[in-house]
Image (cartoon, rainbow, N blue to C red; front, side, top):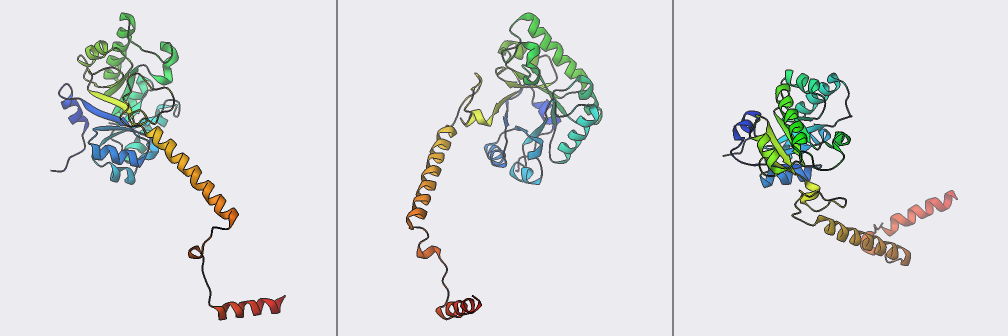
Length: 266
């Protein structure tokens, strides 16, 4: 039986029954790999969507991100959301105001929002650090989640929040809660492919788990690239390239006729 793509109704029905897997992908190759691996959900840049994406990942629930600051008015968000859905998205990520989330919902566009550490708004919570580790901070997250629920969002990413706090919130909301560094008490676990594949050369988050060392492989390939270019340069300089097998030949009679013609024209 062919696996079907999850719907909003499916995701809601699965809440509390099993953990969903979610990755952030940036390329069609990563999307195809996620499909073959059985990943449930993907976060994707809107420009990745289209027929080629759906050919690569036909059964994965895809959430294109309407990045905060790229759009301003509700109308801009709405137009971008419709484009993303038409291109193959199943929902949209939106960390804008409640009024914009509500407006998207009024048009039947499923919205996944954000709580906890919200990178685009991190200055309000003290920068890039854990959120919800005091009763006051945890209560603020709870109120945000209930407000998102009331505004019509179907899901929310909850980022870098203590596990017990995230679990208590997830158990008390209808939203599908997507954990990024918020422990196993939520409905889905979300990582970036850069971290999973070990190709992140910057700061590696505490919650990241590295399954492969692509950075080392990229370094090896770069060293091989430099070596190949160096050998090519040396061959050109010495005359070792091109060899006879890299060259075209011409019949002697044709060459003589050509040379005779250009000699007469000189």
